[in-house]
Image 1 (tube, rainbow, N blue to C red):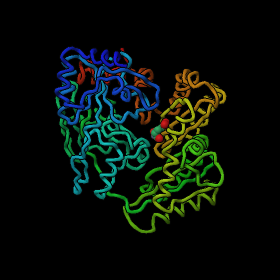
Image 2: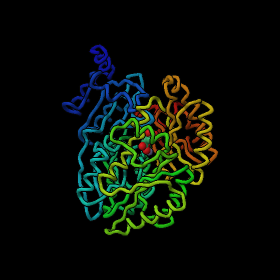
Image 3: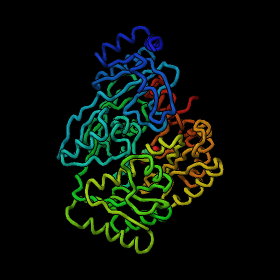
Image 4: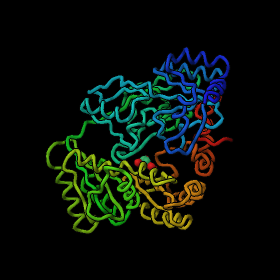
Length: 483
Ligand code: 2HG
Ligand code: ZN
């Protein structure tokens, strides 16, 4: 262990170690292998890298200075927030030459403005802490993802996270008014304007949002908040198929489209894993079903109107057979329990063994055909595979996940990951969808980029990368495949 640690530290070019120590202060630079271990493996345990050091700046200035030093010494930098990437986007490669730059110590909510309804926030604040801060101010940060307890704002923006409320509020980029970025050469790019209207040249912030740390490091942002809802209603519904789930969505939308805050789909297979593998997540319906929907409505108005809307919509759906059973949350605790049944799918699938994830989107109308065809294709490829899709059906994003057959060898199953991903992607493509809806490209899906985003699109991406990061130091090997 000790030998590896000093090897790793030694692989920092001469001079850089002292400069970084001075810039980052005590506790700001880790070089011992045991200290760096949590930063070099991803949440899924798919990618295992090495780093020459882990930098943990406490301020945007220290972060920019660390990047300047790295540029001077040609050290690659892997930005890392809460390390919750599903595509290995924040894990260094095995060379040990890159420095991981972790944002968690830049963790201040700088300001909340109740008139502008904005939050000025640093990259290392967890999404959950940011939501709580907005709530305390009587406002809503309308971004919610299953990993929000660990995911940090910088990573959430760098990956343009989507999640459960996209159906109503859009993806992360729709919430960003201002951005502060440390550029690869160590300069600070200050785009911290909290303006709804600002047509003064290229919208540079949008290039960094969703760039997965390949262009610079987001150190802070100004987020647009919303008025906190005064009434919320949530229900879990059993349905017979994805087609029924979609018809239910259309039924809610035709009643009151602006009331839908989340509309989530869960296959019976995936819900079965949650029900059996996650303590305290028990299905409150009498019979298991083929699929489930979690629908949440919210309104800025108090009173029973929203409840009425939910009850009427569910009553009709039960009567006409669209929904076979339903349970309506009667309290905040019950609403939390219903959300637990949705948020634990990734964890339950992890506990069930190896899984291959396909975070895809297709037009809403194509979802039933997609799930049917992709299920058949995967079952033909891997007999006994557990087809366990779930996701944000209201915005067309399905996590078409496959869990290894029970009792099978996980490594052998994972060795087929490209066969599975390519089979699913082929169907997604025929239906006009995308091979990555919200998790990004990371290192897992770079191989798909030339085929899906080739020609002028990939060329423009490469030119932007070369212009902003001419030494190619920012998150190498992510998003853009090597030439
Ligand atoms: C979710 O929607 C996350 O819960 C994780 O995006 C999805 O595990 C997954 O595939
Ligand atoms: Zn998701």
